[in-house]
Amino acid sequence: MDKRDAGDPGRSAGRRRVAWIPVKEWIHHLNPRKRNMKQEKKMIEITRADKRRKASRGPFSTQFLPLGRYLKDWDDHGVAQIGRLEHATLKAGALVPMHIHQNEEILSYIRKGVMRHRDSHEIEASIHNRYLMMMNAGSGIYHEEGVREGDETVEMLQIFIRAREDDLKPDIQFLELESSHSLNEWRLLAGHEQSGAPLTFRSDVKFYDLHLEADKSITTPDLNGNLGLMYLFGGSAVIKDHDETIAEGDSILIRKEQLTLQSEVDSDIVFFELDESAPYTRNGLYTR
Image: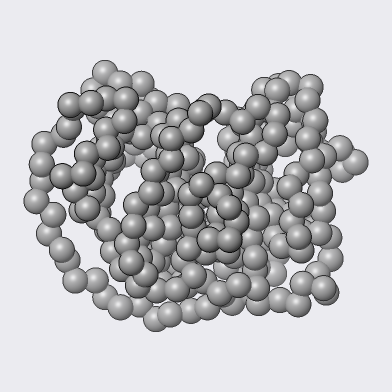
């Protein structure tokens, strides 16, 4: 067994036999929104936190970001390579039992607490805000996640990215960080193979995070003609020159703009850069 129980040596959950279940083959789709980017106009679309769809079961609860669902003339529930985003909490005793993922890249971005991971590669690990995990599901990975009794509640963003193509080789990556936060500057955590990011998406995406202190200002990353999606994990900020205030749970879709943000309170922010012209599959089990 490959045991990667960082920060908690010697502790592991009971073993469970994993049954490999045949999964139906889904029709492959490339991105339906190929565009001539030169013809696109500037765009800032803010979707407020109250548009998130809530679901809960016992000690597990989640809020699904609406992504493309409320965008005018948008033909996708997702946004380019992003198939699904969940702002989730898992209280002590929570268990998401063993299940499969296919044809999607899943980043567990944890801000609080420790989540216990186990998978069909016989890896066990404790993941937290200084030890992140990426599952490149490819042709198939089974996993389960839980929080031990007596542990702190986990708060996280579960990020589901549409892979570039179907049936890639499954892989799991871990990243140990020097600091849980990137103070007042954007930190590139994950990206495509040429991005130089420490975690790799097999898709044309970059993912940044930031902890912006109160009364500090910052400009969003240069999109290089691509599409941007920003999410306020916590806090609030003013978008200068646009007379808009964004708060916890709000998401902002951005095209052909660099926004200047001024934080009203300490704020945690994440940012995606998405290449709409690049191919991606809609055959992921959670990212169609």
